[in-house]
Length: 316
Image (tube, rainbow, N blue to C red; front, top):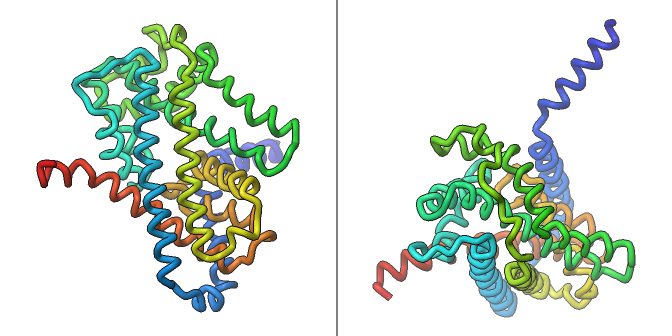
């Protein structure tokens, strides 16, 4: 009896642990230890004009990737059967994308939902928001097998595209609605039960989202180009194949999207890159590249969020 009580207590404590937060803290520890161990080498890194130009190109590619991501979401909304004429979807995406840095990492979704539901049904609003990260994940999986030819990896990763088939989408949306019901409930007057029940038909009659997926794949490529610019800034891009580099980047980006408790995958993305490429590239320049890429991606998010306010200010 005592053993059973003890086991129940242990399982109860484990279930209460925030797994995402725990993984993020472990990644922060790993990253911090790497920075500490290479602090002297990092401090010896110099910022030349050539490096600045590479980093500026990194900002350009990262900025363009956000625009492409916004366009992919616009196509996704149309794919699920919602044609919004009174709302600029790209503008909404860019204006809310910066909210992902707020604690909780959900406020960009909540803000989009609160705006979308004024134009389309709550059902379609939730569906478009929940499908968007799935679309990004599938696009990311496309590049993981490029590290080298492994048929099983190709099949495993590329079969993720089947998730976007209408029947699978219906199942996923139902499950995700059930999991995220409290998020939308706390920001709306809709009862949580209504979100868990599918009172309207989901987009099972919609076509496979070829166009949104294709554009999302381009988004990953541009995101990678921004990262590659940071790698070239510290002269280590020629030391590794582009296939291995984009494979590791995609894997780190996917894990950073799924796991983190910190905004924007901070710490998780960098740790996965260090773990996967640390043995192939000199650690200090790789760390410098990662730290610069974090700055580059954050600056590009800020610039993208300022596009429409600046246009409005100068009446462009």
